[in-house]
Image (cartoon, rainbow, N blue to C red):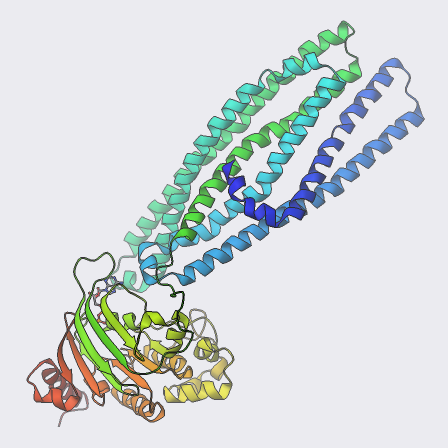
Length: 583
Ligand code: ADP
């Protein structure tokens, strides 16, 4: 029952609803005592031959009135208690979501998305159940159970009540045993479900790769196994769950048997009237619900606790990249200086970047080139503080990056990643993602700079065309240019193009870059590219090799050296000539 204490903050917050819900619930529990009593009295009058029509009508009116009152009141407590429970899952869902958005990529490397989704669905619904059905069952089973037993003992026969309650301790023991069995099996079922979720997510995201390698059958087989596992584990839960009700029925049956056997004896020796025995057995019937409910309570609370523990653990996961207490609330501006002696990815043993030292004046353009895997993207990710923990520092406007509020730092940098992501929304909304208040003129201006405006006009609904999974399918180059337009709309101090032009042809790339040069005068641009022509105008070019700067300088300077850059440039020029049909 610890989970009720842990949820104390919530019950406090929803005090009014819970208190009124519980009071109404108690009142209904009392009202429930009336019908059996009335039926018993009617039976006695019939037995005595003293029943009159007027009396019967009176009692029937009482029964109907009580029935209607219970009907109405039950509706109210449901609204109060279940309605509040829905609020709890909303609060937790929002907290989780906010937490997820604050976490760094390291967290997503560690956690599986399927797991996170399972937390947000199954676990939250189990917690909601605890705050709703759990509270209801606790109050209702204790109050109905308590009131009924009191009514039986004090208004009918305490002796018969004691006899009929003999089987109860067994019930308590069985219930607790079932509870712990259920908890264990439910936990396993939940884990299997997480794993299935994860598998589905991975397959859906990687469906192209799966198809390319003809792995569909293996993938289906793997899914089938995981799905089977979920069924198996849920079957165990269901089996334990199913054993519970029949077990309770046996115990209830024994109680009924005792009440009839001993009750009949008391009626015969005059200790009880027939009517009282009828009331008594009806009361006993009323006890079945609280007894069963008690079992469910264990079940619900166990599930709720397991889920609450998991969600709480997730919420306790520290956000690893946070603002300093006295972080500067200004958008950084100025020169950028990298003074990194070493950077190793969390969990890796070997450093990925070594001795990366360079300075870039505000307004200059930096080009970074090198083989795939040489560390270009990593170097840029450090600038937007996606990863930290390097030896050394990166200065922006003379201050270490950590001096600025993360939000402000990221406002200064328009980062266009290699793997662009478009939302299922209109082209205009996708471009205006960072600034939903942008006017259509601003959006079109950005699209023009990114050389995508004319393409967009060709779409059926122009800027209102929906893209993404549910919309028009775009070419890789179009997606890249929309991503660039998105970054350009921010007009950031620093524009970072991380191999973001790989899917457009050389001519379009040149057009985009030259419009950027004209429009971003005085602003810093960092470009990584496989095509060296993309960075030949840069003020500084770095060649990365295995995380180290192997060559540096301007295009002309690098062409003087007999190194990777020179060789690659000549190679690419030749390639282009061949593509254009030779000399
Ligand atoms: P490039 O942009 O030059 O292709 P990257 O910076 O993307 O190079 O990657 C350099 C190396 O870092 C690769 O070997 C890659 O596997 C590794 N790497 C990239 N991201 C991570 C990460 N989050 N954790 C661990 N290693 C990573």
